[in-house]
Length: 90
Image 1 (cartoon, one colour):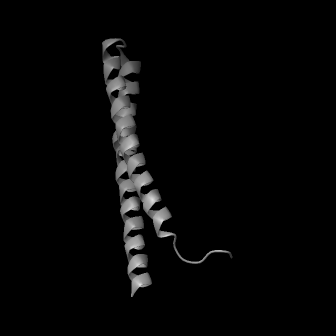
Image 2 (cartoon, helix red, strand yellow):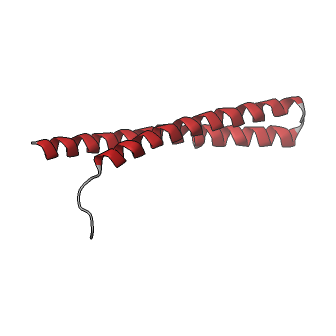
Image 3 (cartoon, rainbow, N blue to C red):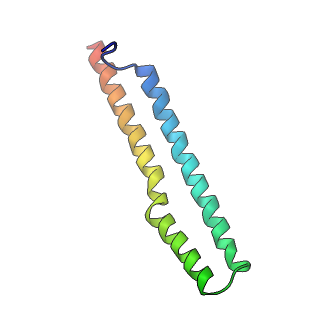
């Protein structure tokens, strides 16, 4: 093994990237929700109702949780980074 410990600067960068990814996923989900919501103006019927309902169920149950998971991962990385900095200086 060639490396042992933590590259604090790299972990900080990765943490910021995770936060940006959380924002990107949230924005993409909101954009997709808006697009699917507009389907009601150009598609009517049971198939449309099923499609739209399935999308919003998926969106609410899965996609809306992704940003918070990424943000939590980012915060955990920052916590570990702070621990490493403390240990390295004491």
